[in-house]
Length: 347
Image (cartoon, rainbow, N blue to C red):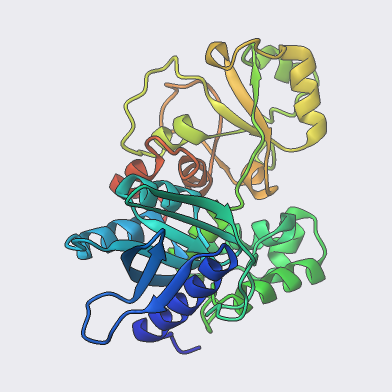
């Protein structure tokens, strides 16, 4: 599939912005051809020049490039229009004073006392890349994860279906949606980093803070929590900050940092809550647990290089990176500085 030109992206982005602005009562016209702006927005008699930047999927790294490239906006405001603008990218845009329009149905705009942060009608008339939500459900998350874990040598759909105990047809349907969204190349390789950030946008594990860490003794007692300390197939996997540090991410944390575990199933989560107790305060947690968004998290586990954080196996580096992408405070910065040596960087 041919890549859409920047001019076409900007033109389509401008049209989408005009439709969204009109839906909330703003007056928008195209700027004169001899002006460096794209649009003019009139609010309470004041005219605000707008420069449009557009992309299919907008991630923090792209935002940083846009801000650097457009550092001399002068009296204009920058607005990014995208089919999907990830949460970390939205935060970066807010911090930089930029506006944005996510075609799935949300607009944010700040300028000269104007503050808009509102839902707008979803716009699929000018979406450059078709499906607005190409990744949803375990099958799609699993297939996207499998591609990103081996971006240069994609696995077969049947092998992934077997690994995650889903039907082949479910994986085929998920793969079709990714292709239609132009997140997978013609040769089957994932489009990087776009697929990573599309996956990060739906990566929403629900963490439960526990009062105690599990012990090896529990694992010896028929392993009711499914820790899998002595099994190679499936079990608890450390991800998040501790998991990323174990893979060499530039994070300064100590041995006392509470690990973030993924568990294989909801029943394992319930057992852990019963046996280890919930922490009354998140800040006092011994660890957190969450059901893995895809079985691959708890299947693809690795021995850590040392025992600094205990005997736990760690999740694949991809999943630790997806967790970091959810951290608004330092996640994007850590990912930008992290160039892993043990797996392929896909962000």
